[in-house]
Length: 193
Image (cartoon, rainbow, N blue to C red):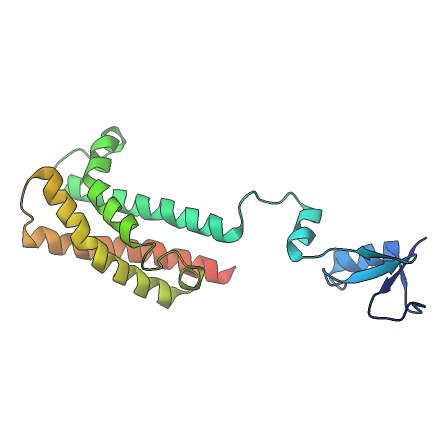
């Protein structure tokens, strides 16, 4: 059996542990990933990082955690704005179901463009913001406050109409509520992990 010695100990290594003991300690969590051990005179790194520790037990996910979180938020934000458009169309007696997905997307497009033009600039996808409820809600409100007039302006340009004040206010409040519910739930779930 090979003997493993912590590199911080002298070369004589009186406190070595056997290979099976090192594996047992690592699987129990008592051997810290990143520790280096001396094996028969040469350096052997058990595991350099926690990522390698995870990879040694299971297949690694192709995307890092931050990229997965951002991708999920982007998809969720787009769906929240589509839900807003579907609710708006339904309240006006227009088609809003799955059969009218193209029309719902057309209705939501100006607001989706406005949101995604502003959200990255205002840090709506930063890990420090998305991991806690209060910063998430504050950043969501700030981002929507800036994206809202952009979306309304694009809608007015596309439809060649003016925007009634009542529509603008209902849009602001409704989208803010939907986005806050979605993003707040996301922040709570993320914080618990």
